[in-house]
Image 1 (cartoon, one colour):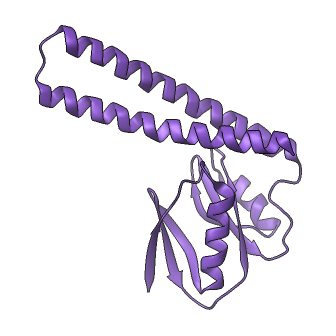
Image 2: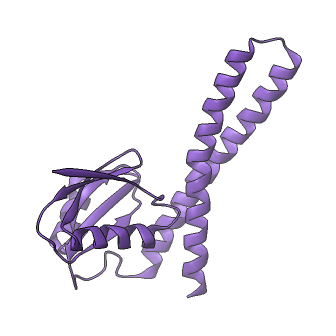
Length: 170
């Protein structure tokens, strides 16, 4: 039996999302996949797994095997984010704060760059649409598409920025 649940945003609140996955496993629902913004859980025996999130942009077998050797099983391994599961008490994925901070900075800068690109495209397209007569259906469709692209980059930018702020306060 499977169950689906919407993610609250991995970049926006990673600690809360990992806590949710742990609580679901304790109830017998174990993460098996992630489709777009939805977690896919499979029913099993309740277990006290811990989950960890990584934001590597390039995933390869060598990287995944290093995690496996340290006790972390990749459950979701997409380019841009990976979710790992391990037995309670397994050493954390990041042994030092600097490596985690470096990945957060890299991802924040990447998301911020694309958020700026889509913001600029929205402004440029809006100006063009105001000066040249274009079918309103096309204008609204393209603006909607650009706005969606902006949102899917802006929210991660904000989330990575908040995570970095929290890390720097520690």
